[in-house]
Image 1 (cartoon, rainbow, N blue to C red):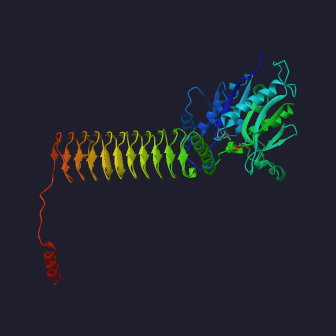
Image 2 (tube, rainbow, N blue to C red; image 1 turned 90 degrees about the horizontal axis):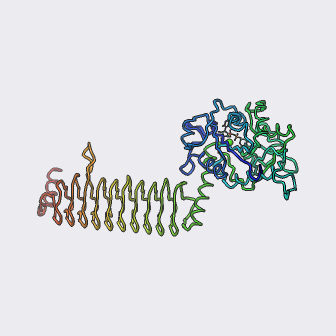
Image 3 (tube, rainbow, N blue to C red; image 1 turned 45 degrees about the vertical axis):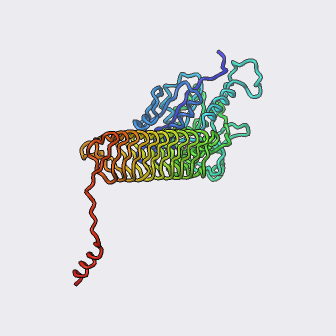
Length: 486
Ligand code: UD1
Ligand code: CA
């Protein structure tokens, strides 16, 4: 059998408590851009195309497994969190007879790129396949028996907290020394262990049970595997990746914030190259599942969440929040509007300060203005509700005009009822529409009316007490006051 490609499996360590998070929840389920941290490591691992992904879970394992959300993955429980070496040891049954590469990843590395892992696998394969410089060897079946592993390393400005890499001139790692076990001189080393390792399974099997916990933290360190492999006469190489931002280990919430910022800027850059303009992108929040289109323009302070999509030429003004919103083409979403689980069709204008929620659908060229709330309603094409209204559980036709202050009174204290307003109806300002109710086509309601009965097509409905004029009332009032003041 040729060894053009070694087989590989991935192991992701996610059993730790994450004590430094000070959280009820396990560390790796905390969200970054709307997805659990573990989601990103999983995605990167999958990109390298492993035969199998094994997760080591323990602390809060049900929550972690739910967050991972992978049916054909393998979950191995680490009952006590005795260290990263102990975590890997729990997975041994899955690779002790495996003739390939075991790739191990810490679960708290949300920024690592799939391509980096792919390259690491290739590098390991290349090392295993050829001896030293004989790269042109015809004999592709040759396996370099000395190669036991590759550790991805990087150089950081501040190595505090990371394991330090001690290596020889040929990039062979002699030892990895944890922060807490490092002497002053070792602490100066700024090449660190990223927490990503590739080992040739048959050799890993030889050493994994030999780890000791006689160190500052009394843990079984996976990093000590390197030393043990060296003692066997095997070699572990450092793959030094210059871009250290990929390898932030998220240990506390401030690391989480830093990691999220880096990832956020990457996504904004991606959408920017795809044709979206961002004004002051530092202030724009965007989640993993959001999709933008060319010639979208996003102003400062906008939040784009969930499965939000935005069509071409749409403008999103300052402070708008979109969550699971489907926004059409050439819409204008004006300052401070909040749109959730709803659809806005092409050329509509929303806001400023509108709120649209619960499966509302706003038709093409409709205008929903300031301080208008639309809930679970469909609004027809070219319909306008431009000021201070509540429209809930309503079906509004096309070219309807809804006057300022109109309210659908949809709730009687027990149940929600439906309001139907047909095409080209004209709802006077401050109309109360007491549902269930139907306002017919081209029907008109007088402003200030409380409408409690259906209005036929083309009819006018007014509900008001007759207005009274009292002449010279101001003078009478003054007189009365003088008398009282006596
Ligand atoms: C680890 C490395 C360190 C490296 C750093 C990179 C060790 C001993 N040290 O340190 O050299 O520079 O990562 O970020 O490995 N976990 C378990 N079971 C356990 C302990 C941990 O599953 O018993 C998991 C955690 O959930 C976490 C990962 O392993 O996802 C790493 O553990 P963590 O405690 O964060 O290791 P570091 O101290 O950061
Ligand atoms: Ca860590």
